[in-house]
Length: 348
Ligand SMILES: [Zn+2]
Image 1: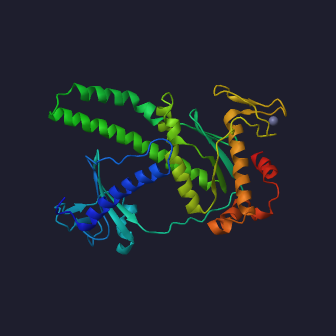
Image 2: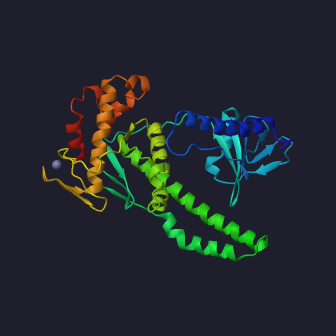
Image 3: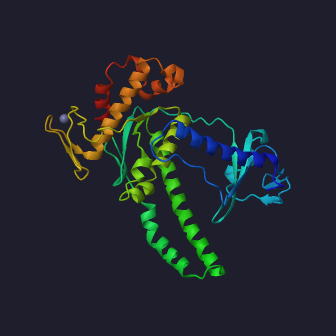
């Protein structure tokens, strides 16, 4: 560590302090659940540089580290189309070297405004994230859950068994460990890729997205479902939805999850049902709908209500989303008098 560039040292100190202050903040605010006690980073696999200590060679394909750490020059491989050399050096704010199971990666943190001109579709949607399906939307469309982990489980188990049979400290054990790590890496990349593409497709084809504000951490604690929930990668998916919504400048609205699956999306009557009941049947208005689709319609209603209330309270301007709310319906949100009725029309 002694010879590491000062900014790199600074960056790791920053992260340590962030962890400590996060912990105290959680304690002071009496945050329910785990407080995130800072852990010592035994096998830290990354180094982060800010704007010094590295130099991008003129050919744009080599990166030299100029501090005394002895990393030297690295040749950058990877996608030609995503070459970092297309950005002015001033825009590169951070450079991070990360070790993964299949090699070393350089991450460049580039300061840039990403905007995509959203072509209005006139469609608003509510999504209900689930385990049977990845999500069901308020139009009744279903996106299948790819279950990457479940599919890879047999292979992972075999690799785990193989690893445990190898003698400790042997070269074969090292090899087996690497194979296992690579298999896990593959699963995580498949999840990430799917989450990202699905989120992009969702945002591109709608002008407003309402989703349930799930407490994923609480749900993962349910040990019967935790594997499946992690496998569904909702957290990553929602992050990408929010990201693309910002890039497209359309509203993505989080909705409190209470009663979304119980209430009737047609008349609002609360119809109690257990998890195993897959169909919503309303005794009051006779509506029969798939359980998740009913929830998705409720989520859309709630999202539009929130948008309406925000417009009504005049907070939209302060939050800088006023233009996006206009995009959502092609009219100013404040002139919409009955979001509920409007919603049912949209939902069909
Ligand atoms: Zn009803």
